[in-house]
Structure formats: structure tokens, C-alpha cells
Image (tube, rainbow, N blue to C red):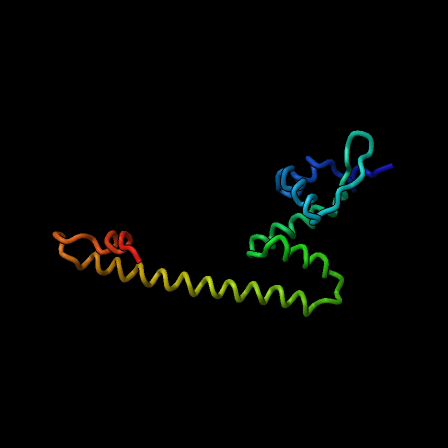
Length: 135
């Protein structure tokens, strides 16, 4: 017999984890959380899955892919710290590359804004002219 305090229906699990039922089903379909066997007409989920779902959502907020999150879950036995660090370091490199790209874009836009501010009003705005130019 199941314990009400330790088992949740999919709707209650979704509410507790602050996600939609569709998210739970998707995570099941890709193996991030297990699909329990039905008990009668319902499936009952262990309350511990709330933390797993929150872990997945936090990982996504940090920019980790679902594949990377699945790998972290698989490696979470305390014996694979180097592999876990490797995943995090690869993500950091990707973030650094995106930051560099964004800084270049910002610099280019700042130059165009400055040129627009200092171009005679009788001439086309350099921002529009630059965006319309073919390269």
C-alpha cells in the first residue's frame, strides 16, 4: 500500500515541482525521470522526484542541455567528479565564447549608434544603412 505523504499523482508532482504535466511526460520520454507502473488507474510518483525535476530545471537555467543533465544524473554517485567537472567546464567555455561574441556585437552596435548620432541629419542613418548592406 502506498504512503500518501511519499507518493504523488502526476498533477501533484507537477505542481510541487512547479512545471507542467507535459514537462513530466517529456522528461519520462527521454529518460530523465522514471515512469512508474500504474496502480489501478493512476501512476504514483515518489516525492523525491520533485528534487530531480528541480535539478533538471536549474541545470537548464545554467545553460546545460538535457543530454548534459542526463549525464550528470548518471554520474551522480560520487565516483565521477572529474567527468562532472568536465561537463561544467565545457559549458563555461561555451558561455565565455558567447560572451565574447556578444561583446563584439555590442561594440559594433555602439559604433553604429555613435556614427548615427554624429552623421548629418540629411544623410541616411548609418544603423539602417549598415543593416541593409549585403555582405
